[in-house]
Amino acid sequence: MNRIIVLGASGQLGQSLKFVTGENATGEFFFLAEEESNILDVNALTKAFATYNPNYCINCAAYTAVDKAEGDLDTARKVNRDGVENIAKLCKEFDTTLIHVSTDFVFDGNSPYPLSEMDTPNPINAYGITKLEGEVVISEYIDNYYILRTSWLYSEFGANFVKTMLKLAKEKSELNIISDQVGTPTYAIDLAQAIVAIINSDNKAAYGIYHYSNEGVASWYDFAKAIFDIAGIAISVFPIRTSQYPTPAKRPVFSVMDKGKIKDTFKLDIPYWRYSLQGCIAKLLA
Ligand SMILES: NC(=O)C1=CN([C@@H]2O[C@H](COP(=O)(O)OP(=O)(O)OC[C@H]3O[C@@H](n4cnc5c(N)ncnc54)[C@H](OP(=O)(O)O)[C@@H]3O)[C@@H](O)[C@H]2O)C=CC1
Ligand SMILES: Cc1cn([C@H]2C[C@H](O)[C@@H](COP(=O)(O)OP(=O)(O)O[C@H]3O[C@@H](C)C(=O)[C@@H](O)[C@H]3O)O2)c(=O)[nH]c1=O
Image (cartoon, rainbow, N blue to C red; front, side, top):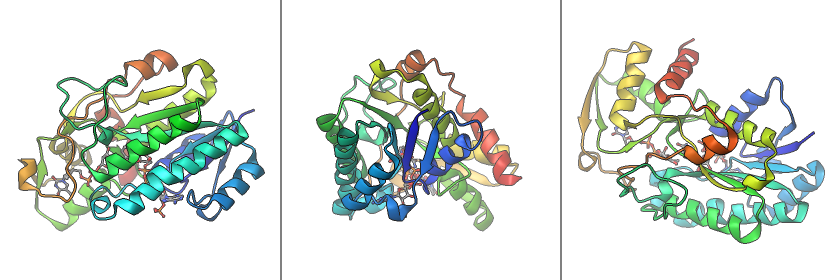
């Protein structure tokens, strides 16, 4: 039976993994508390690898504050690059397969078509730069890794755009939402299920980088409209340009990903984003 440690277990994806593996888990999952799995603390991390002797490590730990990272590059880099290096070294030492999560924000947004794993990253913000550095450092240490780039994660857990919109709807009667940044919302529960499917496939010939999001395409405006439609909330939502909503970090204008590789390799059926959103909102409003 696989022994799997999860780092960053209290974040949104970590909690989603805990939820999906709660019943009928086909491996032994260990969701490490933050004090035993600070990815910057090599001693603690080494102890965790020695204790659990995992054959898989899922890294959900990351610095994810996109705007804050602009003024805090060193901290973002410590977590998203140096912390990942610590993990990769230990994966090498313990012969552990690493499942690491990365982002659509490693791309610049200038692609005219959905991004495949063959496309060249070119991040345009500090968060994206450090996430790409994390990807590179993994490939320098080990071959037995899966890097899953995903986008626009939301769920009933942690902080995310869906929860922000539901909160703002309680405070405001109208919202302005950017309509010229296009990508795909991804339900963290669906991503967690894909991760479990990858582990269950035990396909050692398939190591490498994969793109995973829900199916379909939306702008942040479309995403917000869908949230309020599904939640039955009456609020005025206006589409605006990026220039009308200045933020410290630049964001890619187009980050739709091509999921062909992950679907073919692991025989995955990926849900349409709006259907998954319905499921999440039903849980949030229950
Ligand atoms: N959220 C999104 O929209 C997207 C996320 N991703 C990627 O998916 C992955 C999961 O993201 P998500 O779950 O949403 O992010 P969260 O921010 O919800 O979770 C990240 C977790 O990492 C923890 N963490 C931060 N620093 C350390 C450290 N030094 N050691 C151990 N844990 C640490 C955080 O703890 P604390 O909160 O205490 O800092 C938090 O619990 C990340 O790699 C992210 O880059 C990719 C695309 C979209
Ligand atoms: C709150 C708000 C946001 N927006 C815009 C700003 C931004 O372009 C977009 C999303 O804003 P957020 O700050 O919620 O999301 P952001 O942190 O940019 O989300 C990103 O997080 C990282 C971790 C990733 O890896 C990415 O895939 C992506 O999910 O919505 C509005 O237009 N109006 C608003 O009222």
